[in-house]
Length: 87
Image 1 (tube, helix red, strand yellow):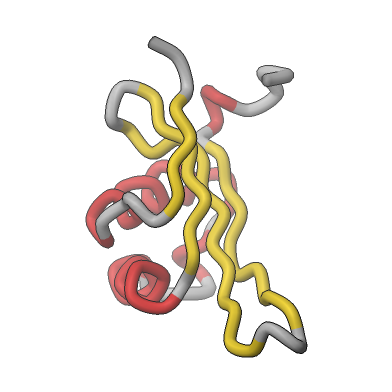
Image 2 (cartoon, one colour):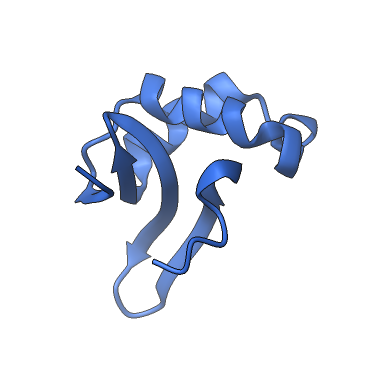
C-alpha cells in the first residue's frame, strides 16, 4: 500500500508510540515527558503525518499562534526504518 500522508489525524497515543519508537535515536525522553508531550502536541499543534499500515512513521508538529509571526516547528521525526528512503 505504501506511505499515506495525513494532516491532524493522529491520536495522542499514536504520537506517544511514535515518540517512543524514535527515542533511541533522538533521546527525546531526556528533554520531555513523552506522555505529556504527546498530549500537548495533539491538543495544540498542527501535525503533518506519514503512515504505513496504520503506523505513524513520520511526524512534523508545529504551532501557529499568530499568522503574522509564522509557525514554530516543535518536532520533526522519522522512524529509523523509514529514514533515507529517498521518497
